[in-house]
Image 1 (cartoon, helix red, strand yellow):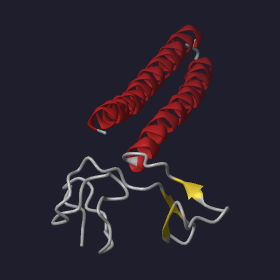
Image 2: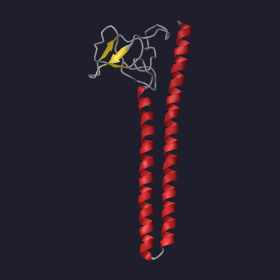
Image 3: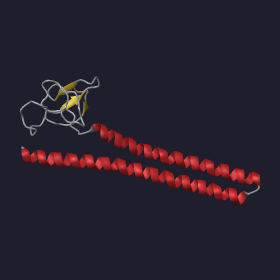
Image 4: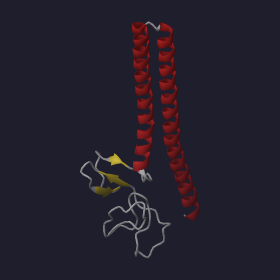
Length: 159
């Protein structure tokens, strides 16, 4: 059986009343979605256990909603940082090559100007890419944190 949430579609066990990933009530269990599932852990062997069965060496999930999105937002931020430095290094190499080419052809000033333009364009574009990816990744963090805050807030009122 699979989770009824279209975005999740995680595999459910027959005794599951809620999806262990997103918390959606399992289809056909007859209970309301207000009941909270027990804390679950994921072992390194991908075996699911409940809080009363958990050994000491488990990775705690704590019911975190959409853990893959958190990983992807972190990846976007890290990729943006890498691209910023890669474009900066590439623009520096192009700057030096333009200055060398200008010096060899007898146009030192033109080579210097073109080199500085390459350097400025690479640095600015790298910074803009980094800024865009960092803002996008942080927005995903913010949305997930807001969703978790609202979920916890409304969960307390229903209990």
